[in-house]
Length: 300
Image 1 (tube, rainbow, N blue to C red):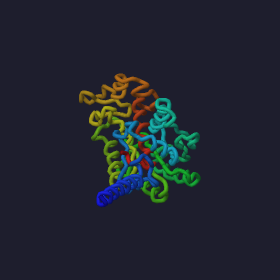
Image 2: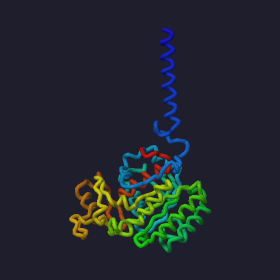
Image 3: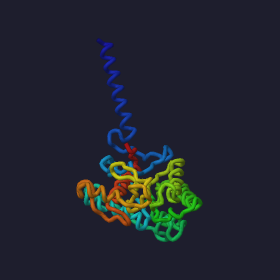
Image 4: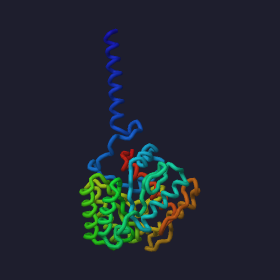
């Protein structure tokens, strides 16, 4: 009998130790770990597979709102993220609220706060880096920086993209307490053989090889919510594509999807510069996936 009691006690102890180990690792019991994961463990690529909003645990949405102070520089195409996020609040509620400063429990997202540059190519391809340094010098609480492109990746050379990657890496080295998010350029209808795709692949390859955070703007635009890919159908930023392979864009996947689904239930109307509401919806979902990952969520 004593042997049986001892055996039971040992088994209970092992169960207790296992449960404690899960809690300490963070996330298994729904609680955030003490420190966010180190990006050196692998790249974090935010693409079309990161557009299912209800897969993001609410606790990590709240962790992002509690911990992140984001500065986001962009012009019209980049506004798809923020206008989509603004519309999302009306669609899904205050859980997804944001404002400049993070008041009233919202996410602290500072929309176009930089002076001296508008996006990654305006007024030139380097001004954004100094604008970032100037802003961080006067706002040391900022711990996430995101810049988007307008149409400059379409005309970029390999050297131009190398300049972008080098400047980003320099900022990361000089501000190790700040997370810098890389981004691809929006679709332009030039297809898989066009310069845009080649330059976006250059950015993707670098981010994968060096364990960066990447918001893959172009990839999100290449898929509908049903996972149908339009990347080989010369799609553009408006979601137009060539349905019959004759070299002319004759359909729009976002408008088609919207017309076959219920507005206010499956998607929501919002402004989407140069594009359709559904595109901005998906950009907003992916943005919240990014914020949750930056807050420490493992994406599972």
